[in-house]
Image (cartoon, rainbow, N blue to C red; front, side, top):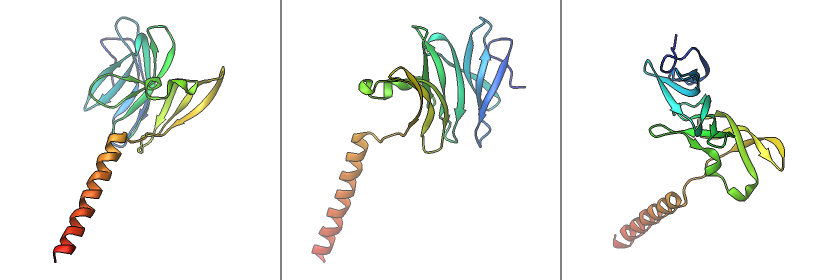
Length: 159
């Protein structure tokens, strides 16, 4: 028995990773349903996106959790939880001019790719999100590689 959140009446598991971390939905004593992460023998409430309810759907082996929650306006939005802090609305991570509203994230693999469904042009469609490294990370990596090449060239010239 994984228990419930704050004395709620039910819980349901939706996903598990190779470390035995479990995600799902559990009722709170206040009658709301919240996404949870069960790890190390304890159930953690992941909160909401400003509304009253949320549900975790999947977890990868790095502990990244995906699901959906209601916003303050009552809409379902897909979320990502990466540990620490709170869940993050996936709509804040995509180009607002794309025309998409990401409603539900259902799975995440070990490469960090997320699948789910949302709305585009008034129709429901499946989506696949693939993380893109931050430009500063790429730039620093390229500079580091350039510095190593420069050092090797200097050593060869000095010999």
